[in-house]
Amino acid sequence: MLGNASQTMLQQTALRLDAFDVTDYWTLCGEEHRFIVAEQLRAIDKLGPIILEPEGRNTAPAIALAALAATADEEDPILIVMPADHKIESAESLNNALHQAIDLARQGSLVTFGIVANEPATGYGYIRVGDQIETGCFSVGAFVEKPDLATATRFIDEGGYYWNSGMFVFRASVYLAELKRHASEIYYACERAFESSAADMDFIRIGREAFVRSPSLSIDHAVMEHTKLASVVSLDAGWSDLGSWNSIWKNSARDSDKNVVQGNVVLHETKGSLVMAHSRLVGLVGIEDAVVVETKDAVLVCNQDRTEEVKTLVQKLNQSGAAESQAHREVFRPWGKYDCIDQGQRYQVKKLTVTPGAKLSLQIHHHRAEHWVVVSGTAKVIKGSDEFLLEENQSTYISLGEVHSLENVGSEDLELIEVQSGSYLGEDDIVRLEDKYGRKS
Image 1 (cartoon, rainbow, N blue to C red):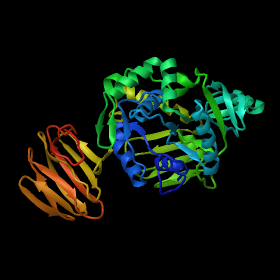
Image 2: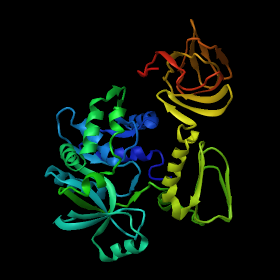
Image 3: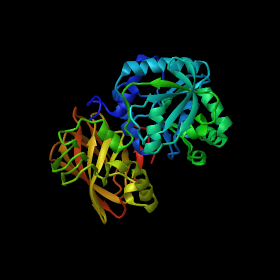
Image 4: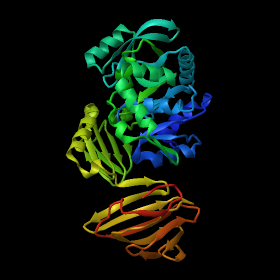
């Protein structure tokens, strides 16, 4: 729906740097997203170390982990920090601004980008510029929190205010030094967490105990608002932050009724709405200015002008301890993914998708048995001392405690239905005897 339809926003972000001599890519994400992130970056040949945050602690600690990783071999590279939820239309304008930012970073600046504001938006923070350093480059006068509409309108009328992009360029050592100076608790927590990290395939697992002690602060609050080294480069590149559903609606192609639709959707007398259906039919009647997002896990319904409050809804969901806040129905693994279709007392049904050449670990379960039915593709199965092939409409049964494994030996995705039954069906009831991906039980 946005950008190149064949590329995800993560892939588009990584590919934006092709015009520069980027030698290494560090990607930060949560544990649950690690395999899908790795596969997307591997597909475009941009896979580098993926740093796994044990818990989200905002941008200041996250960037600190990347800076520590970048300086681990005693080098001091310039870092380009780019969130993966941005839309940028003009590659040429971005490249020109990045060249200016890199030059300033070489001189010791902590550089951010100020987006030329074309409307009094209330969903963005602002940067008030100070003295001009060179054409399009300024010192930072002040960072301003998201304003109300009247204040945002005044900013546009007065001039000298830019939207805060959340993108940065600086030397790793300069950022770490300023973080240590202005937010030492974050610095030392991240340093200890990185020292206790461990490599796991493409991933760097950060020490949880130390990392969760870090305050949760943005880079703006922790460093940029306090440092004397901050500068801002003007950027007019068709930028949008797609971090809210409302911004996705604004930046997508709309029909004659100003609706944005994705998936199996039927509308009647509905206008100005974003409707996304991922797994079932969604119908709307007589609705205006709404956001409706249906996924396998949950359904969101809200007004267009209140999409920023989704964060509050998520906080309430986490506080409630709801199962949906702890696990997703669709889960990615290094061999592919599974979708939990149904579950109840003593049973669970999953659809497994195994990519070509991929293999599930050689394993046993202490509390469940499994029945595999191949829907499409060809599977090589190890069961006890037997090894055999299963094709479409063929099945096999794995009894409780039996050693087993599964491999896709075909050239297309292998799809199968797995029916589990037993006294305990948790994912931690896996004892891995062999695993090509280096995972432990």
